[in-house]
Image (cartoon, rainbow, N blue to C red; front, side, top):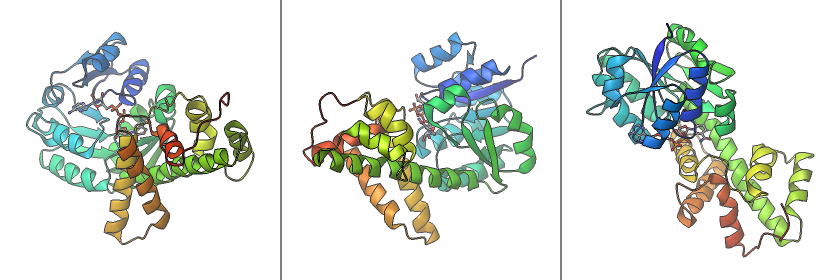
Length: 300
Ligand code: NAD
């Protein structure tokens, strides 16, 4: 019989991860307040639970992939949270929540006899669909080893970062500092280029053949900005959260981040001009408006 596991938060990332776990031979029971997201999982063979506690009464292992630290805390420790469940033994957090959430949550879960692992992921919706995510695991080594075959169903690059909970989360914040800075600074560069008369597609082609190449020039601009589809699948609110969490960690550790502070300002600007729910590639539109630049007609 297939091992049954639980999954909470079946959105842009969690939904495709559930599909890969089902395809990999696991029986998956899901919970999410968004009925459409749950229905999509059920159509692929998942079963459902009525609350985090209900899920934790039914399965030993629960993965969560949730949008904010406050929601992670509520799902793990709230009134109807996982910590109140009778069967759960292991909680694995795939969300980006930062060590300052994952450490106290793990400590509180330990009091309820539940082992916590950090396992934040990178690779976007494309990686989640393909099952090629990078997974950055921290927590007790043996528990990581026990659950590694399951994590390999969602990511082909599973890295064990260390035994101390929070280390995986810190690693993930550092990654997103780099990726968010690259997207913001690429939008700045392309905006200046357009104002100076350069063609956007030609600029991206040249960056990608040159030393300015980065994840924004290689993937996000070609797929989502040049096409004006703005469909990268990673929200501006999530990007701002990750950069903010990274800067908070830097301040707590006494590490100065000059460029990182600029990136936080850029994403704060995108939040103010647009919205948390829009696609993070839309930061380009906000730079265009700020510089009174019009996207050249016919350039895509
Ligand atoms: P999303 O908003 O698409 O999905 C989040 C899901 O959580 C939604 O289906 C929502 O209904 C559900 N949810 C909200 N409140 C809930 C609650 N109280 N109980 C249960 N479910 C609840 O977000 P996403 O893009 O899938 O991101 C999820 C996490 O993964 C975030 O922490 C994000 O930073 C991280 N992440 C996202 C990407 C990406 O490219 N989108 C990449 C790497 C990591």
